[in-house]
Length: 464
Image (cartoon, rainbow, N blue to C red; front, side, top):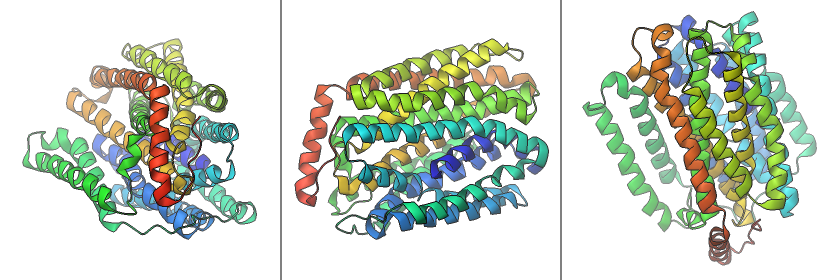
């Protein structure tokens, strides 16, 4: 249920962007911040929330996250202006950061068998696909009937129900040894992500060569340069750089960033195309996105079964090819493209996205010490949010930089480079699938687990 409301929130908000823009007089960059304010905070706090849950209790942290997310949703529905909406989206994100990695940690510690864990993760991904399928339609219906504020109401009853059900059915668990907080690492991570995303979003309006934008890129680079050696010296780092000695873990992280960058850009551009260019109502635009979401709902649990039986390579390869094909198809968009082209491209994109979620999550936790499952799952979730932030930032900046003559007249030409970026994300996913899922990669995961386990006195999660 926690993943359901998070997945629902992402597609609902995208469908509502044109309505938000009209009522709150927001430019393209303002719409970007409506999405990225949430994903940035989420990405910055996910690993902290995962390690906190391992330390103080996973159910306790999970329930606190549900409460904050639900309260944030209520505040978003009451926002009087764009600035308030962005601020309340950040409150939502603080709660959201305590949901996915903590819930995944609960699953990882409950299902210790390799095949059962992969299948459970597949069901987990299927729920996300279902929420994506419902999001555009529910969101479109709410926007058309109650306005954009209604899109946040749906989270409230689901959040309250999840809090009660967690108290009844989720057992409390925590790591055997408490991990110390890492405030310096947390601040460095926030500085890195915030300055990088701000520079990308505001670059077209401020000028890429302006002192502000160059300075922000410099701060991001400096934060990264300090973050890695600092974390290597800590006994309990926020993010252990040694995890990346495992090729499957490193590949899962890179794939998560790449695939969700494609998703963030895809949703952002398509929402504007369907409503501002084609003139569809929000509900109609939501129905157009159903082929993508339904394909995700079908392929996610199927992917979990394939990973459990055959490993991660097959679904990741198919995913990369699907993204390439859908991106190339979308470069052919015009202001009057037929439904067959749109539905075909959307369905193929959904297949690619649905197949890749289970291998990403399974590869992230496989080979890692089980007692650090919250941190490992947090890295995977944070990578997804980083990717979505960058996808929205990059695609929005590409659109703003090329847009001439208004949205309706200039969108098709201005968005074409964005669709090529989607295809490029598919190519990167395909390459990563071939490099990080072979026998050499699995050996690096086993060696990484062996090096990490003795120091922490933890047994590794078995590598599929």
